[in-house]
Image (cartoon, rainbow, N blue to C red):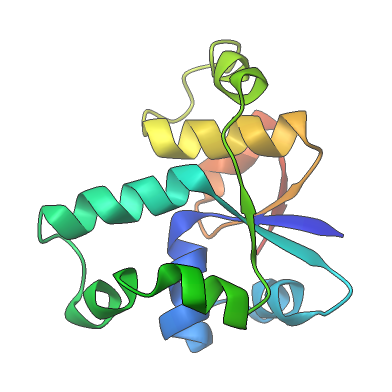
Length: 129
């Protein structure tokens, strides 16, 4: 299975895996799964870090994200034009631009989205939680 981590799921997988549901944790830890992290999530983390809006433990990890991704075998997912264009076709279920882009990536690339945000399931994307 190919899974895309929502930003909070990515941060929790790195800093507080107990906050993930059992199903989400299995999806992120199963070596048979390809676990992806969107460049949009890293961008969101960088923005929040620069604004001082991350918890102290998370703010520390922000500087070592590439190493942490490698250590956990999480693969980067670039944002492509096809992803950005797909956002335009999404209904306004959710207003957060980062979440909308993650949904578009999951739809375009046929990925399961690991998220605790129940609103995202309204897009018809396959949600793991």
